Image 1 (spheres, helix red, strand yellow):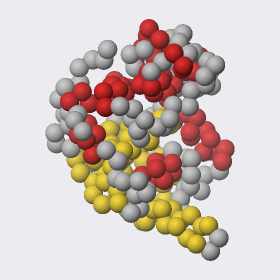
Image 2 (tube, one colour; image 1 turned 135 degrees about the horizontal axis):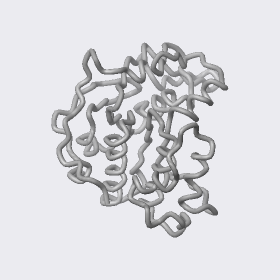
Image 3 (cartoon, helix red, strand yellow; image 1 turned 90 degrees about the horizontal axis):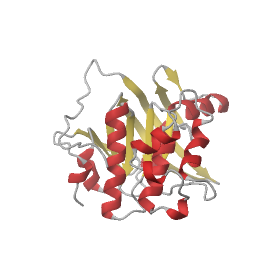
Image 4 (cartoon, helix red, strand yellow; image 1 turned 60 degrees about the horizontal axis):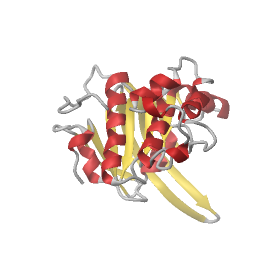
Length: 250
């Protein structure tokens, strides 16, 4: 179904690596009445072109908040966030809308497919508004679903539905793919198929990919592992033994 990924040389960012996201002393505070909830303490982080990063940590560690800010779905309380040379920190709603539409693909735990549309039609919703899209057929072929083009979500397994969601996200050729617990609702074997699709997209298209998970076993597929704890980054480690998702075990 997918090309072999076996052993892959990990990315080791160096002075020549191009930074896609630059985060400097970013915080996020939610205010509920007189109560302040510090979701993110000051964070410094760079994400590099073409790498696959796993953001690892328990529920409540700040992973989703960080991903939402990177994707322009939320804004920080303080600090700076740059996408390449564009500062997003105080960007207008219109700028953030263009940023999300043109540069970012989102994949969530739940697939958010429209039940009355086929796989092809669900992907076409994105390709019709994208600047330089691939065809729905090509996007679905890339995730191994060429034989499911005209199936409705109810006719697809959970893993197939998630792969349609991946196809929909990559069809606009985003520079960045942000994935929030993409295997959280799937069993072990199905989850590995979804992770293999993500790894293949990262390798073939060079899409900078960030995957949120609380599952430490998934970290072995990453170029770097960012571990979060209590709203802060506890460690950032290069993965010297990166493997194919088919070899993951958890």
